[in-house]
Amino acid sequence: MGGRVALSLSARYPEMVSHLVILDSVGLTLPEVPVVNPLTLAPSEFMSGLVHHPEKYRKLTPYRTLDDARELNHGRQTFARYLGSQGIVPDPELELSRITMPTLLIWGREDRIIPLAYGKALAKALPQGELVVFDDVGHLPHIEAPHLTNQSIRSFLDRHPPVS
Image (spheres, rainbow, N blue to C red):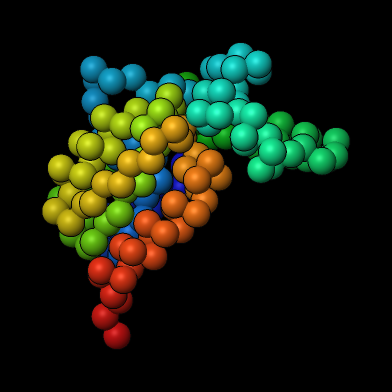
């Protein structure tokens, strides 16, 4: 839900944000394109809902101990309380027109949680929105394609250097 927080902060206090990077985040409503609450997925489908290649994800982030499993479960419970009954929805007070700073949107083409249509719509709605799409990547591009994610952010910042 970091993207929702970043979008909301940037719209409410644009003078505090010079650049924005968003990864697979809901920022508007597309009634014809459903968003999937990952907590509604069966435990056996949870990872395949978040990532395009679960076996690759497991190699990158193996569960090393019982404590890791407990922490993941605690995070799911906290996330469920945060989402409430509405699921993943944009900030109802979000004014996208106030987000005028350079904004990089990174999306996994195979995102089953927040489909690519949301990234395309956000790119159109934001005056300086740039959309980068990674093939064979789901909802977690920073984990599934960390090098591509870092390269995209670096390129974005090189093209839009911070003003001192």
